[in-house]
Image 1: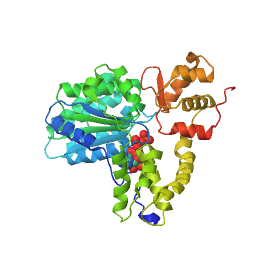
Image 2: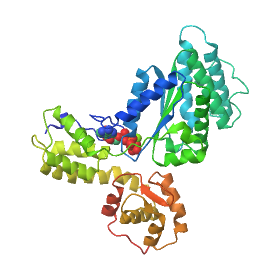
Image 3: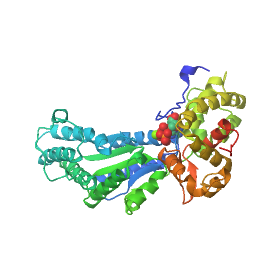
Image 4: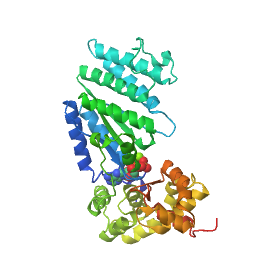
Length: 396
Ligand SMILES: Nc1ncnc2c1ncn2[C@@H]1O[C@H](COP(=O)(O)OP(=O)(O)OP(=O)(O)O)[C@@H](O)[C@H]1O
Ligand SMILES: [Mg+2]
């Protein structure tokens, strides 16, 4: 069928034709935003889920709602090699400038700018005064101690008080939040704690890999009282059916029931794979309804494409020992393989695998759902490992 009219949208962060199965999260966000704005306490939301499950598109939708609710939004994506301060600063600066431009002078906003300036001098991010363009004296002694936990809290307080003075609120949206360093995460949690204690309307909405829950808990024991960690998982059969059928129905096309069943079986309900299979099945079909045979023909193309792109980019970042570790995990199947079993399979002591396991966690390939267990962060990676390394070579 006509490729141009294909409604599916496989890709990182590409909005799906139908954002199904996430209404409860959107509702939770609305409640958080409404309450925070009135100075009522509510847990911040940190969405956790595997690769390709739809965290980014959901966070983007939350951002849209946040704006509609009259909040200022700051949306950033954490990186392995960019500091949180460097990520946030240009946005905070812009926010304060916008607040400053509003009618009437606000001493709180001016103070916010002064605190931001001293914060920058404290963390020693290299930005010249000209670039920064803040023609105001830094507020010496506030937010410039060089200790991120103290400084970030003070900066957030000043920014939130400026927002209150302008009768508005601020939402901070951070994607890939598991990439923050321990120190940064800890400072962020502490700053959000301060927001809650002082009933200030600056909220955090984040998304990251499942390891996030552990990282947050380890960094501050009160994290679980400040944050809720809704799990973003695969779609139920009903939602997956909707995700496939509704977009094509709008183009007067439909999937046959057995075609849908096959896609659900192959994708296990994972949103990114649903988009890929939906997309290729549409392209392979001659006419409506899109049949089981169309899906089966599309499967070959989808698998080749996934293997050559989605899985391969991750595979190529691995050392050969890491590959063998993951191959052994794939051999064991299931979700949550025991470290001891992996070591047995590889014929080595469990301790000797510690560094490999740590590297794989750092690379975002695996996480530890419970103590002593590891699991893949990329759905269906186990099947890929077996396709690409058919034999588990125990000799090397
Ligand atoms: N609720 C949904 N229903 C249908 N398709 C969805 C849904 N959520 C996401 N998708 C699709 O899934 C794909 C992946 O989405 P997204 O990039 O948001 O995932 P992610 O969890 O952020 O992945 P990563 O961890 O790799 O960043 C996109 O093609 C998107 O269109
Ligand atoms: Mg994402």
